[in-house]
Length: 120
Image (tube, rainbow, N blue to C red):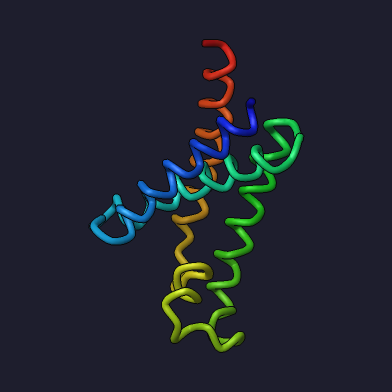
């Protein structure tokens, strides 16, 4: 039952993220989307794996940090994906150190919301 909740919530959040990608502007598109994408990854990981909340949040954070470091070294370009929409969407194109902060906020938010859900 819990896995279904996480999967459904992740699906709903994916719609929100798509809306931000298409219609978002300014800080909402840049850093707001970065916060929420880590929450989304957390939800997907919780749906797939029976791991503690803190481990799941750390995994989502490590993935996000790895993608950001990949941007620093132009991983998309090295893989020949920089000119594709999917490559830019999945791997990004511009390193921003503030994104690391946004990802950290997202991981913390995911755990806090999950703990709040358990107490309700």
